[in-house]
Length: 370
Image 1 (cartoon, helix red, strand yellow):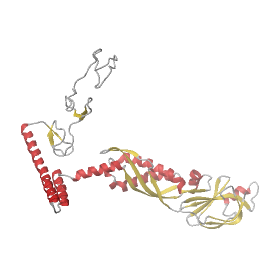
Image 2 (tube, helix red, strand yellow; image 1 turned 30 degrees about the horizontal axis):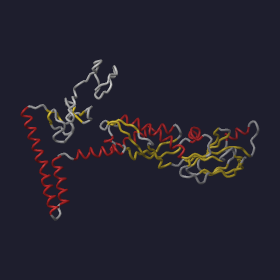
Image 3 (cartoon, helix red, strand yellow; image 1 turned 90 degrees about the horizontal axis):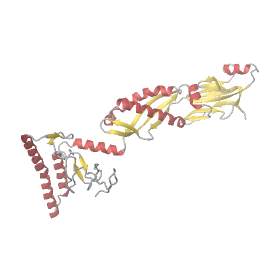
Image 4 (tube, one colour; image 1 turned 90 degrees about the vertical axis):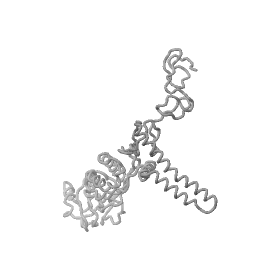
C-alpha cells in the first residue's frame, strides 16, 4: 500500500540507530513540493527501483524538479513527469557511535616465550562513524528498513580479534611485558583496521585496549613467580616470617612462653642450616667433587643431589618403580621401597624375548609369566 508523504523526516533516532528507511516496506508516494527535513548529523538518499538517485545534506528541502534532477530525468521520459513520484528515502545517521565494545568470546592460544603456550582474553572499546552512506547501504544494509550498531558489532568484533592475533604473534614475546605496550599495540591495531572499516563506508575514530589477560590459573602462576623473585634471601625471609609468627603468639602465660621458645629455636635453625650447607659446599669444592649449577638460584650443588641445597629446586629427574609405583631417581639401580631391580630386563623363559615390568603373559608366545 502506497503512503502519501508531505513531510519526510527522522526526528528521534536512538543512540544505536545507523540507518532508517521511509517507508519501512514498499515505496512512498511523494508529492512535488513535499518537505524533506534533514538534521545536522544526518543525510538522506532517495532510491528508485533499487538505485540511489538524489541525496541531501542537513536542512529543510522543498522537493521539486529543480533539486531532484536524477528522479526528474527518470520520470520525464518516456511517460512524462507527474506531480507525484514513488521512491524510498534512507536516512543515514552520521553521529559518532561511542562505547562500541569488542572482546574475545573464547580464549585465544598464544605462545609465550617464558610461560609457554597459554590462552588469552582481550577486551576493549572503539568509536566509529559512517562516512560513505552509499557504500554502507549497498555493502551492509541492503533493503532492510532499520540498521543499528548491534547488527554490525559482531562482525567488526571478529575482524578486530583476527587482526589482534596477527599483531600479537608479530611483536609480543611474553605477556609479562604486555601492560606497558597497551597504547602502542592499540595504535598499531587501529592502523591495521582502518582499511577494514573503510571498505564498508565506516571510519574508525578511536580504538582502545582495556585488558588482555590469561586464565586465572596462569595469573596465579605469575603471582607465585613474582613472589619468588621478591624473596632474594630465603634465610632472611624465613627469619622474618618466624619473628612475625612469634610476635603474634607471644602473649602472656605458659603457652605463650612455650610457643615463643619454640619459635626462637625455629628462628635459629635456618642460620645453622645455611652455615652447614655453606661448609659442605666449601668442602666439596676443596675435594673437587663434581657439581652442577641450579637453574633457579645459580648455586652449585653436588652432581647427584636430588634437590638444590639453597632453594630446594629438584635437580635430579625422577622415575616410577614399575613394581610398587613409588618415586625413584633415574640413576637408581634398585627401588629403595621394594628392592625391585630397576635395571633388569626380564625375558620369557620360552621364547627369550624381553618383557615389560609387570607382564603376566608373554606378548610373543603367550607363555604365563610368574
